[in-house]
Image (tube, rainbow, N blue to C red; front, side):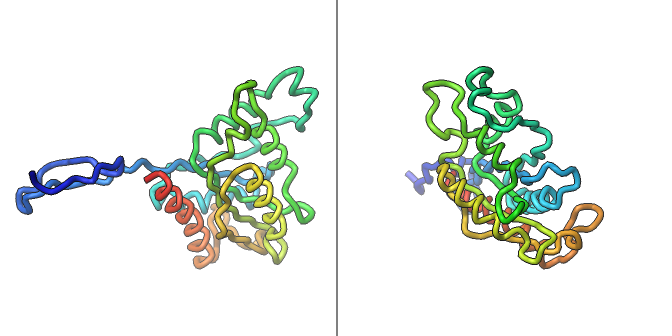
Length: 221
């Protein structure tokens, strides 16, 4: 009786289109949820500004984005003795909850001495820890997808540090997409309002966030 309706979560039957004699279908696919942040604790961080710019691109592509700052999650240096005595710090539990409740990660990581920042590595270490004996290993990371970018006053824009971030996340079960952007001369790249001065560069950064959104949308379909 009539035309078959696609039986997927991506569609709902809305109403009959009498002019065509067929039902109208509306896309009801859930929006992907992306957690975005910079890997620096500095208040006026170039990478926090970069994360915000990429996050806007993800929002415009249809994602639900949560933009956070690591400085709002004060964490002690990871210490297994402290963990055994006190459990996960409250900030670590809160941050881990955010990781687990999002489909993807958008990380803008500075380069400190050719590598990952201590703040970002410490956050990853705490978030990776189980809270109960029956919690699956790396539950806050496995199955996630991520996109990376960096900003640095140097000409390479933090490119060398991203190699290490990519390796760490990959070993934790995160699919890190191949596209990435490194913004050099970061001290000249941002306007006072935090936006990127170069329009072409701004478009590329926005497309990075949009690319993660499109990838996640396909996975959730």
